[in-house]
Length: 130
Image (cartoon, rainbow, N blue to C red; front, side, top):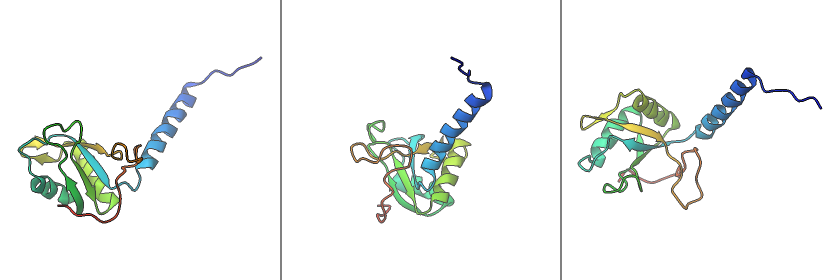
């Protein structure tokens, strides 16, 4: 039987679809996870102040300072656009806290809470920055 071979353009289309799915899953997300640039000496208020230039911060959580790989810091903005702008600025290396470049990514939901994936999880209403 005749089988068509995948073409280079079909591979590009598949990659675009996958990227599009990831991006659409993140659309509307308000929470970014800080993946680098925050240290034990970094204060919550300083991190919050630096990120508020992109929009109002709803919650600024410092995570586990001794083991940030287990519970990294994260910031939830009031508006999705503010989170997008902050993440883009971090990716461009434009956000510094205590002289260190901040690195960030979209936050997946908290472990064991059923909110996984790239959608930014933990976007419950309410809360505070304290």
